[in-house]
Image (cartoon, rainbow, N blue to C red):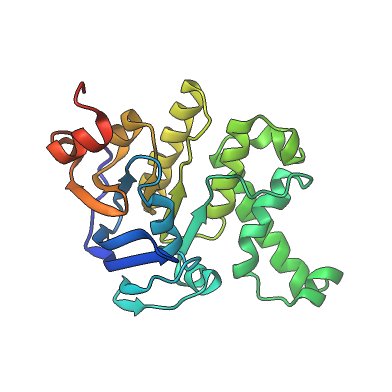
Amino acid sequence: MSARKIGEVILEVKNISLAFGGVKALTDISFDVKEHEIRAIIGPNGAGKSSMLNCINGVYQPQQGSITFRGKTFEHMNSRQVAEMGLARTFQNLALFKGMSVLDNIMTGRNLKMKANIFQQAIRWGAAEREETAQRLFVERIIDFLEIQPYRKTAVGKMPYGLQKRVDLGRALAMEPQVLLLDEPMAGMNVEEKQDMSRFILDVNDEFGTTIVLIEHDMGVVMDISDRVVVLDYGKKIGDGSPNEVRSNPDVISAYLGTTH
């Protein structure tokens, strides 16, 4: 682990319950996230992990409970308001613009930072042109950081899957988030791609000081890079603590790891 200093609690999830019709997706879930930490959410398929992220970033409105970010409690926020507060999200299924270049995809993450209106941006006039130049410089730094310089002008749909995942991460980083929500960033990757992505996640956390909330199925990755882990099963919380504490929790072993681990 890096020498970064884990700070106070900045995100608190309190008694969140979410149901779709009669089906309970989440039941009375509470946990917190500290500044600068890597906080993992794990559990078997259908445990409610993505539903939990969707509540945090305003896609779903829970029926009960509250979410507090930097002392401000919000019960009903939409995704844009959450993004403006400083939370960015990547998605399990890549939501990239496949026909657009790497540079242009990552530029879409700068929209929140743009002051010029759509008309000024379209004609690229005066202040709008200067602003776009500054935003492009910022995006180029992200491209360098993620080591995808050779693909800057390449249409994203023509790139290998592991590199598309990097572009997705880059677009979220372009929002300069205080908290980055990663929904299965390693899904579908081979071992080498997972190692690369783990390194980038650790570097984002270390060099940018970004707090990370991570859903991931690969237990090896979770145990290697996380500071604390919360475990869900059938929408209920069954474990919470350091990787070692979670690894030896009997409820977690039976629900998730299988008794042979």
